[in-house]
Length: 597
Image 1 (tube, rainbow, N blue to C red):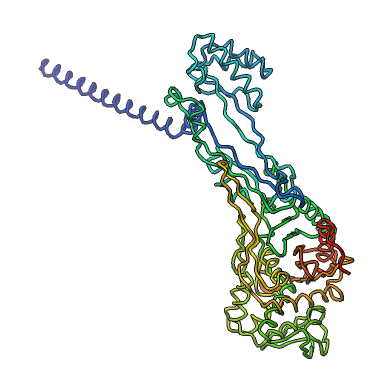
Image 2 (image 1 turned 120 degrees about the vertical axis):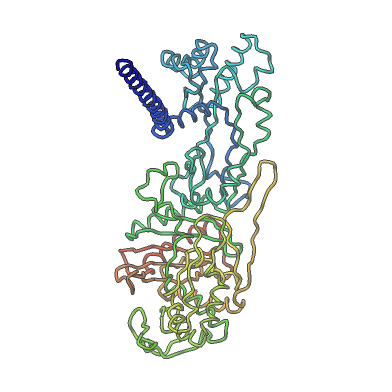
């Protein structure tokens, strides 16, 4: 009996030991799993940072970004002015594990950068550390001195000359950093765009404007990251030879015209209490953009200090809006080109035109009696332009608007270009053509509207607007953009008739404040209602536009001025038209165009 009890007792103890061992194994596995979870999940970001720090001890050789230039004046095309330039500085860091003479290296930092040795030395002597940032902004001159100092230490350490020139120089490294600088600050900022960290937060990339559209060309290619292996047997110069710096952009912008136009726009927006405004100046015969401005603007050097990112948008090419009465010039050109009317064709204006249950009335709510087509533009009569286009089928009218460039992006080679919307004309109901004829129910961008109007200025031709004149690559290659006629839209005789009619609009009509003393100017105002998303139009919001060109007999430039929601006056004749006159007067004097009257 005693033996049996002892045997059972030993079996019981053995079972307890097995159970304890199982729990120990389970606990060990749980601890391992927990540790892995801690390291891989909870501490994931920490170790990613450590890994990045180790990778940052590598030497990064990056291409230098191309710069952006404007024409400095109208005297020489080779006289350029910088709109976006590079300010180069260096970040200096060390790999403490490779620093063999920390005292001497610390002395170099004290001598060259006036650093605090007591602060620097502990960083150089850290163990199990691959990255310590020492200097955030060093000049090229300071880097040259640092290189010379490191070379001297290498010589004193009996390192052969070949190794002395290598990237791995006693654990001291530097990385070129390029700060984009925009000398003109707010002037033309939306056109240029700015640089900001890319999606990974590492490299700088173009955002908005030209910087974004031309990112690939401006950025260059061939960034090299040198680690210990490829640094051992390669000279820095060997790797630099594989880098291709970015290309430079030479714009058609004239910096003097740009400055004057932008400042005039700013004053006008503030004077008239507008929400935003845009101004574009284009050479009538070539399509070269001489100025492109929006206000409010922002300083691209401090792009992150804006109240709203909406200010980044280049409204001159981005904003879709119903243009209002400036479209009457285009509609009249179509009607005359098709032989439906001529400048002297008359009709009886009763003050309204009925389309089923809808009535179209003049903006002044008046009947003007017997008037001709010139008077339709002079007095900006809705009923008159509806009369002029009444026998044109929607499909034909739509095709003409397409030929004028509406419904497709202008192709200015800049980011954010919108295409507008003229699809309502695909409907069969005549009301859509009727409202489109005076600028309702279709949307355009300011750049589209300017280019379409310029068809009249350039004798019936649609020219290709362009902003970039030349791309200069570092290898000496050049890509040049020349003036180009896209197509003939209306007959030359039609354009000549419209020139005369639009001159009369400025002489005696609603656009008289656009006149410039001593010159004949052609143009048209537009006071557009703003569509309410809930239906109908807002009663307290208008967009004022003026488009014109001068001198009429041989146009040098075509200008669009646009103010959104001005509060000082109800019509564009008192806001956008005087702004046009101010810019046009400067241009006529700047180009030294002699008075013609």
